[in-house]
Length: 252
Image (cartoon, rainbow, N blue to C red):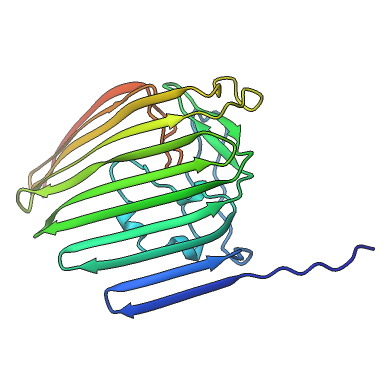
């Protein structure tokens, strides 16, 4: 016995050239998006990663694929509108995403041995930009993200990343990010959200050798305890780690 309600949305895609695509959406409808595959959440210390499947966010998604997951578009819970430009100029590839998120989901509050979740109680404006310059088989990139909350608080992250292919068997990847965060003055939602300011860094460096007989990988990471990437998927901070592995291949 309720009065009928109407709702609508609009999606537009424009390709002014073969190397440029512009996407825009108003009140997008994701009701037909494929459901997530179930994952076991028992005894997990950190949040579970689910891949992005919403069509609007899939354009140019590979440009956000960096060693540190500083961009995770599923943090945009309920977009009211969005605009995205993806293209290539010479050897430079870029993508720019602007959207208004009405919230309603959860925010990851990271830690060294586990993460907590806080309610995403307010709407926010999101800006994400990525730039990548190719040099043969190598590249140098730059990533910038920003989330400004209507209820107070913000998170801004920026830094370079690179891939250097020394030869067909050796490559090095790395990324350095700096974050500046102003927490909302909402201790009712989360105890440490007291309107304070947090500044920190995150770094990743990896060397991979894939030879016929020998394969090895060396990875080092350093995440400051106050590093935040609200637009990404970084559930663990406040640690340093080194991982090393070596393999000998045999061909009987």
